[in-house]
Length: 442
Image (tube, rainbow, N blue to C red):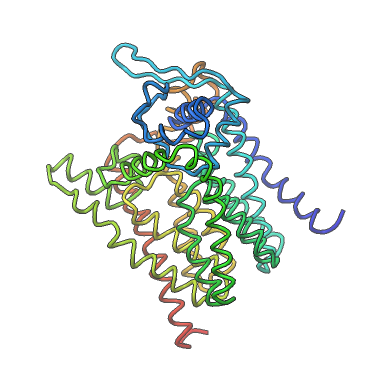
């Protein structure tokens, strides 16, 4: 067995307890998105390439969706959901019982989704180890990168308890970075394109990568790479658009509808400090703070520009990608917990490249604060609300691992702390880079 294979085996062994924990939790927990994904998949299997005609949620009752939420994701993800649905056709039920709307998801559908998410979560853990080795860290330090990601309570929660798929585009993003390090730019561009085709918001950390290529490799390589990445989701979307051109407009309408700034309710699910303050002031003080929500680009733009500047000046793109993602999750009015998976992954991947203790400490602080939420929230809720036959062992375990806090104000303080930590990281990283450029820091 060669050295690289031995090291991969070691990384997998270190991650094994985290994998066992995820598999223990996965069948008996789910958030509200997995039942909704069944509705998306059923519509795709029923209508095929005309799926996007129904993607804005306006036909949710006729289509049997449990919620009126639109489908805002990429064309590849709906194909993935369709394949999963063929393997797991169990029926999602939704009905009013005693005036309460009850949605239940079958175990086969929960497991099918969770196995995919857990697999890609594990891939990310291995990729972080490989990145650490590529960036010059030893075996032990590289394993720490994997551990920091794979045992973060938020990544465990997203892949195996609530159930969301942001680890898929993250894994494709990191796989592309590893391919780029090996000189395989076309493969890298293809992998990034697949990531965008799963979840378009992954383009946020991709743009600094192309800025980096422009300044370090030349405009031609940057433009060619960007063109390949852009072509992948467009090619995958083209059959839908050609089969039903009106579906393009319906899709855009659905995305615009959920992107319109609004109060994030309840605060427990708001991960943006400004949004949490705005909602709390509106509910408890009667103050109209909607203008604060609409002003989120005023915070995002300067923070994101720092990431682009970092991309142009730094010798590798990863820190800039992490800062750009942190700028997004610090400022976007509707940050959900699953968005933090990409932020956590990129910040950990960048740890070997931060050149000051302050940058490393703040990057770690953001990942730690992000990971606190599942330890505060009564996550055992997801072991009951959508589960047909709740498992008391799993529910009891989750109840004991959380503080089970329901006070809205605590989560307002939490989201403020998370937002401030990300903003501070971006500012400090910019200051450190500027000091180095001026020669005032070795």
